[in-house]
Image 1 (spheres, rainbow, N blue to C red):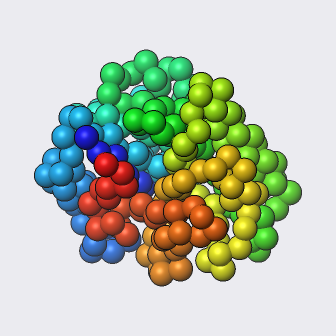
Image 2 (spheres, one colour; image 1 turned 180 degrees about the vertical axis):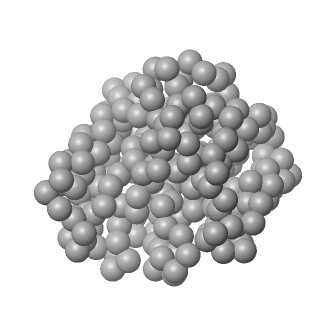
Length: 229
C-alpha cells in the first residue's frame, strides 16, 4: 500500500489534440503512462492526479478519458486543472466511479493523512496578474481553506495538498497559498502545470518546512512518483 502522484495527463481519446506537437517526448504519452502505472501500482495503492486531466470541453466527451483512468489499478483522487473545462458539479463527478474520486472543497484520507486541494491560480506578483485574476485567486484560497477545514473538523492534523498551479514561484517567494499551508501545518504539496523550459525553475524539495513535489507527467518521464508508503 503506497501513495503515488502524477499530473497533467492531457488525455485526448475523444478529442483531436495530439500532444506530440509539444515535442517527440509526448509521442504516445498515454501508452507510456499506462505501462509505467501498471508496472508499479496495484489495487491497494492510491494515486493523486493534480489537474489537466482531459482536453475535452464537455463532460460527455471527457468520459472516455476518465474511464481510461478508472480502468487502471488503484484508487484515484483527481483535482482540477486550468484546462479541465469538462469539469462538472462535484457531486455528479463523485457518483461516476467507485475507485476514482474528485476533490473540490472536500477531502479524502490516506492512512492518517487528509488529502486536500484545489486548482490554485496565477500567483500575485506575476506580470500577468490582473484584477480579474485577483478575484479567481481569492476564490481558490477560500476553496483550499474549505478543504483543509473539513479535514480538520473530522479530526485530521496531518495534511497533503494537491494543487495544479505552482503555489511558490521560481524565486522561492511566499504566496498567500504558502501562508495557508504553514498555518495548517501541511507536510507535502504536489503540483503540476509547468512543462518544457519552465520545469528548469520548478521548486522540487523542502521549502520552509514543507515538501513541494512537481508531478507534471513530462517531468516524471510519464512515470508516477511514490510520495508516501
